Length: 73
Image (cartoon, rainbow, N blue to C red; front, side, top):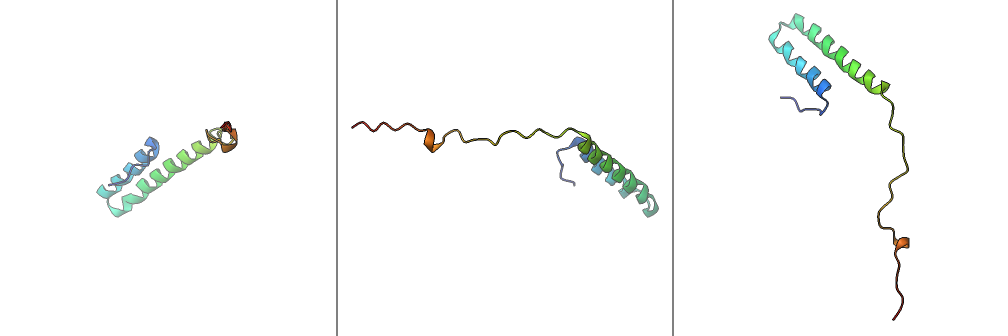
């Protein structure tokens, strides 16, 4: 049993590896090469997607210097 990666296309490629279980050893290479091509294609598509634009670092919602202290007695 394989642990899902959370990426449907990658999981489908990895499931394809199970096809080799039903083949003679000389048929494994075809399955492995097919899976390898598919995974390379998935990685290539990730490189082709635009990268997220980095934004400002998140700031905490409560900063000590933003608090107002009432010094009245």
